[in-house]
Amino acid sequence: MAIAIPNFCIALNNAKECKPAMDLATSLQLYFRSKVTALTLGGQVSLPPTMSGLAVESHKNLSKSFANTESDLMILPIATDHAAAGVVSAADANKIIDQLGRMVLTVPCNGTQFNYSKIVVPIDSSFETRQKVPYAIAMAKALGSVLVILGVSNDKSADSEVLINNYIRQVSSNIQENGVRCVSELRIGGNPTQQVLNFAKEIEAGMVVIMTEQEANLVSFFSGKYSQQMVKGSPIPVLSIHPKDLIVSDARL
Image (cartoon, rainbow, N blue to C red):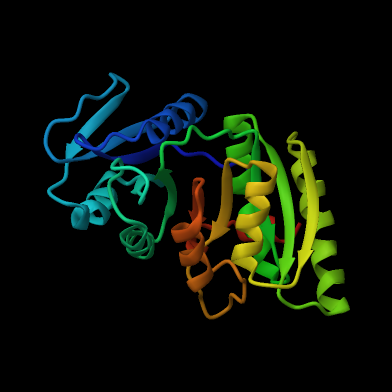
């Protein structure tokens, strides 16, 4: 099933512009032909004619304003220690992700212009881990990226390695069938979040695609506290996908 994003939002602060977030919004809008609403804090914000604006009193009202737009995605610029730009802190971003229950694309405003030629898709030993793949495919098509499948686990057992390798083969086949180039690698042992961040830095990736909160039927490393660590620690954009958004049919690759 092809992923469409007919409506999305971007949070903006007129005093703290984050150009990489705006550039990313423009690229996604062009590809998906989306209606884009800018949730603006701090007064009047100059917007391109392709975006409409909605004033928001404070970052605490972002979740409610997002819900009123019926959007599928929020692009959320994150303030970092290295730059004044951004709308919210990483901690507040994680709260918003939990509140929204929809896709959130966090963009660190650290003065970097991101190169989206490679997007990292972590795959662990849980059944649900593969459900993020359709969204990664959509992003790869929109941004002209290669998907880099990274098998990770803190379990060094042979059974875990065999299972993850099987999942990697399945998702790689699905990605290629959808006309997107992909490569893969396996990293076993250690903290999965740190493994992904280290790997993304090594290959100079521009984005990571993860799942968010822990639900009763989910045992993925990339949910709950691991997703929060990823958003907080990542120097590159992170697409966080809520389990409610996952396409069950595509999980059975």
